[in-house]
Image (cartoon, rainbow, N blue to C red; front, side, top):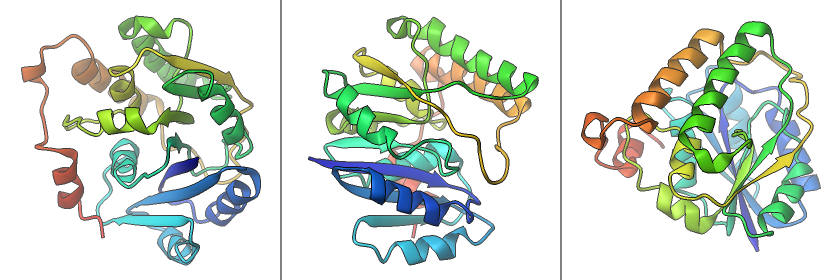
Length: 239
C-alpha cells in the first residue's frame, strides 16, 4: 500500500523541515509527500527545493497565490497513492496520527476526518461554528461528525472529485457530494509553534457565504465554472 500526503504551503519556512522529519520518522507505510507552495513570500520555496531532492517528495510551485483549497486540488492531481492524506503545514497535526487515520479508514470508510478541539478566540471560534453549521445542515449523513483539513480518503474517491469545475473549490464540500461513508477520529490538535493562522472571523464569514452559494441549494447553472481543474492548474502557473 502507498500513501500520498498532500500539504499546501504558505509562508511556513520555520516548520517545513520539522514537518518532513516528523512524517518520515512516524509514518509506517510507504508514502510520498506532495508540497504545494502557494506563492509564499518567505524562504519556503528555497526550503522546499531542498526537500525535493528526497525521493519521496514532490514539490509544486505556484506563481500566483490561489488559496489553500485550490492549491490542495492542484496537489491531488499528482497523488498516486492508494489513500490520500491532507494536512496543514503548521505542525498542529501530529504525523503519528496518520497511522491511526489509515487504520480507521480500513474499517470500511471512503473518507475519515481527524478532528480535535480548536483553541481559538471568540471571533475565530464563531466563524468556525458557522462553517460547522453549514456542513451539518447541508450534509445530513454527517450527523454529529465535523470536517477538518486533516483527513484521509481513498484514491477512488479522489478520482471522482477531480472532475469538480467550480471556480470556488472547497475540498470537504466536493468530497461529501460523492460519499456518505464518512468516519471521524478524535485527535489532539497541537498549538501552532510558529506564526498565526491566516483565517480571521471575516474570512470565515466570507467562506460561509461562498459555501452556501456553491455547495448549498442553488441550481447548478448559477454557479460559476472553470472548464476543468486542469485548465485552472495551467492558468495559475504551476511550474
